[in-house]
Length: 109
Length: 113
View 1 (cartoon, rainbow over the protein chains, first blue to last red):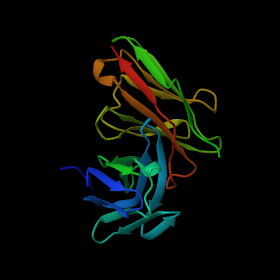
View 2: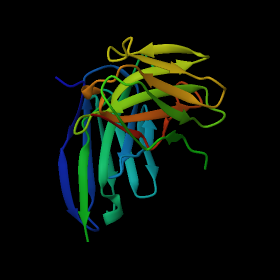
View 3: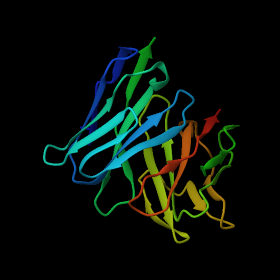
View 4: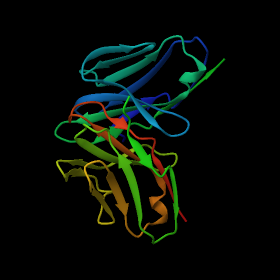
């Protein structure tokens, strides 16, 4: 069983829709990351959080440590948001990130 | 905004050859990482590097692999005697502190034929 699970695996939306991507993990973590991988392959860090909620522009990330669950929300989605969104976690006393398999989002005009 | 740069963007090599993947991390960062992503699979941790030595490595990072920071700016991943299954996208990343967000390079796509 994967230590980090994401859902859905694939997501299509119409421009303007509200998007939610979910991440559940089974290990104790010190932090959780949301990353965006562009079609060309490059990875950009969106959020790093260990509690509560963070907002950046149209993106919102939340985490519930007790439930071992995080969500990434995109408000007023746009075709340029089309990418793979990846959840990854830091466990305690380790440098490595453990990655989820990603959620492929396509937003159509 | 400073960024992590990786070269080359695409490397094709024959099985059994040695390759060196190069990375220039953000200049004031202290923690350096290599990750890889086999096509269609999730990203996997290879190695972390701090204070001029490996701080952690995964099971994947066996004797075939080595890392070096030869001159205070470059951070290299050497793969000796490449195998077909080494074909993947290799990402370099750096961070200023251990518990701060990672900055990734755009990756080097390695194709072993």
